[in-house]
Amino acid sequence: MNNGIIKFFSNGLPVGAVGVITRPRNPKGWKNSHFRENVILNHRTLRGYQMAIEQTLSIIKPDATRRNLTGKINQRFEDAGLRIVAQKRIQLTPAQAEGFYAVHSERAFFGDLCTFMTSGPVVVQVLEGESAITKNREIMGATNPAQADEGTIRKDFAEDIEANSVHGSDSPETAAEEISYFFSKLEIVG
Image (cartoon, rainbow, N blue to C red; front, top):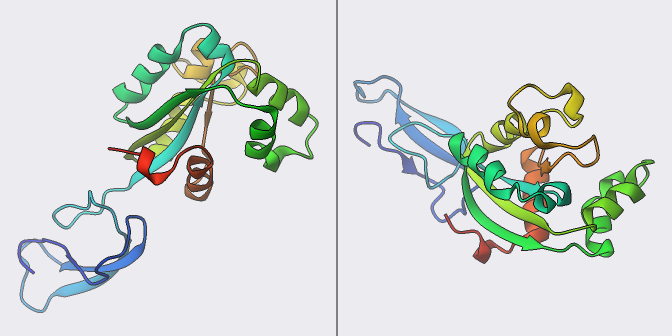
């Protein structure tokens, strides 16, 4: 190992698996000064630095597609450095909406949410980039547009707390689950 080039000891693990790398402790790479570190393997891990490249699910909701805001919303994601690596415009069935939002099935708003999400087409997409989950949530703004920061998607485009234009995953685990709900691995191309 020279010049901080990463050597993977966990050969053959898929992207996202935990693996071990070794790299120099200092910029000079002195002999015998290497250490081992557990990292999330990613094809964008470069020259001794682990970039937190993530994927997250984004949904452009019926209120936004009805008003032809898809392009304006996607421009915000791209301007912030997120890439759209999978995308499709679909009409959710009641069963699909109920399945996707099953985590909220005991909450009072569940029925209205499912009705709203099936009221028109949605755009489901996978966004990819450094810290994509956090970045997407910052770009979207607070769920309640009245509480969202200026310049966020929800502040600028949402009609109300339900018709708030966009959905985004809130954690890596949720992102993986939500992405697989709508996309096969073959459909995600970067």
